[in-house]
Length: 386
Ligand SMILES: C=C(O[C@H]1C=CC=C(C(=O)O)[C@@H]1O)C(=O)O
Image (cartoon, rainbow, N blue to C red; front, side, top):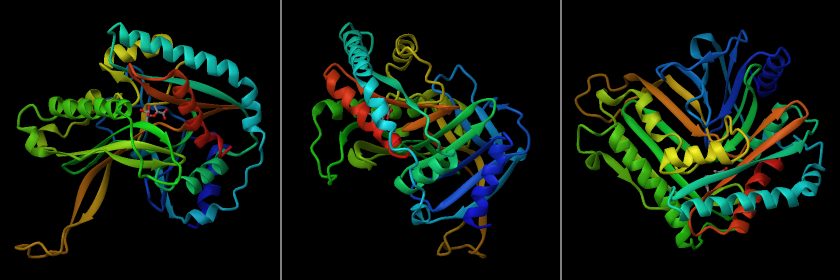
C-alpha cells in the first residue's frame, strides 16, 4: 500500500463514520492505523486488553480502546517531505482568536492568581491550570491537519483518533507516559517551559527546576510504591539528570526514568493508577490538585491531559546475535509492548468548532502574566497547522 492509498482508506473510514486511530511514534517514519469495522464503543476494563487506548484526564471516567481483535491494522513508511504540499486553506484563524484574546487573558490570569492563593493557603504545592480556546472552524479535512502535524513535529507522538461516540481528537505531544517492552519500563518527567530561540543551551530559573523536580520525585516515588515494594528499587531504577529538550517552538526540562519489572509487577493497572495524572498535568499532591482542577477550571478536560497509545501489542524482537552459549543465535522472541503518551498539544474538532487545550504548572513563584504567555506559545503549536 502506498501513502495515498493509506490516507484514502482512512478518509473512507471517516466518511462512513467508523472508528479509527492513525499515529506515528516519536522520531519514527512509520505510520500505523487501526480501523474498526463497526461503531461499537469498547471501554477498557482493567488494562490487560490489547489495542490502542484513549484515556481521559479524570481516571474515574471511562477509557476507550480499539481492540486488536476488532481492528484491521495497516502501516506505511513516509518521509516528512511527502507532506510539504499540504497547504493551509485558512489564514484567518489567529486573527479571529485575537479579538477574544483580552477576556481570555484576564480569565486565565485570574485563574492563575487563585491557584497561587490556594498554594499559599497550603492546599497543594503545585497545580497545573489550563484553558480551552475555541477557534472557528477551518475547512480542513482532519487528515490534512494530521499530515501537517506529521510534517512539523517529527520528534513528537502524532495522532488522530476518531470514534463517532467519543469524538475527533488530534495532537502532537512531546510527553511519554510509559514505554514498556517486555520487562523494561521507561518514562519521563517533563515540565518547565521557555520559548525556543535558536538554541537548547539555555539557563533555567529555580522556579522551573523546582516545578520539574516535583514531577520527577512523584514518578520515582509512585513507581517505588506501585512496582517496587517487594525489592530494593534504588538498585533497579535509573534516573538521569535534568536536560533541555525541544518541542516545536518551546523548550522543556526533561528527566528520563527507567526500571526493570519483575513477573509479579507486570500488571499495568496499578502502575497507571499510581502515575496518572502526573504533576506535569495535574499537580501535587495529586488528589487535592485534581479536585481543585475539576472544581475550578470551568470546563471539562475530557481527553486533554489524559493518555493514549499502544497497549500490550506483540512485538517480535531479534536477540543479540553476539550472545554466547546460544546454539541458534538468530532466534527471535515475542514481547508485549505498551507505548503510552500524555495527550498534550492537542485539539478536539466538533463540527464547526476546534477546541485547543493548553495549560501550565503553577507554583508559589509563578507569574500570572508569564503563565498566560506560556499558554499562548503552546496554543501556537496547534494553531499553526489549522
Ligand atoms: C500541561 C501542559 O504542558 C506540561 C508539559 C510540559 C511543560 C509544562 C509546563 O511548563 O507547565 C506542563 O507541565 C500543556 O502543554 O498543556
